[in-house]
Length: 283
Image (cartoon, rainbow, N blue to C red; front, side, top):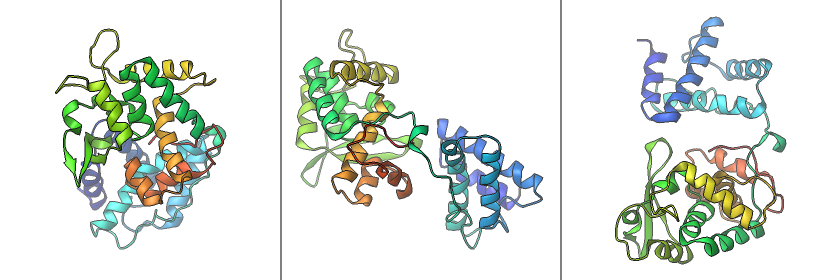
């Protein structure tokens, strides 16, 4: 096994599920390009090589946002190889990526007033809609994360504050504080229950799944008279964007978003909250 192959295996071992599959595909594409160019995929690579690869992705007709996504695994591969001492410098860290234009995004964001209306209307539907809306729109959870929240997950107190334990993207555990308004809504949803899934299907009382999250968000958006498609990621997007617009330091917003790289969080700060179209991100 070559040094590059060993580094790739070590890097991919950090991830599982969809992220592992995606990054493995991106590294295969990078390795294939290097082989065709007579280059070692790791040793001796310079920033110019990485930028030639990025240009080649664009020449294949990929959208700028797709090119940026294709580079996630490659940039992580070099970053950790550098951290592990396999290369002296990271050649991808300053490689120029295409700028993502707003019209490429499929995420429809919410401005501050729309987010407030969304949260208020959600609570008028059912306590389950209210809890889901706050988990997505205040704590910036992803759809699968919100669906997986259990009552036991927010029973602990840390430094005098109730906290929520969850397993996020890439099976990474995380702990986040719960504000009093969020905790109040979660407690209303919990009722007299002491364990089990928090958010339930309002009619059947069965635990929700990712598809239910999408359906419940769509129902809230319709009731709130938001005249465009709103997804669970729209709420996550709104939570992060509104935090940045309110002057929250980038580091704190990164912690809220649970992004490994602050540059990912910065993508959410490309437009003022007064606009209703989000930036390109699926993180």
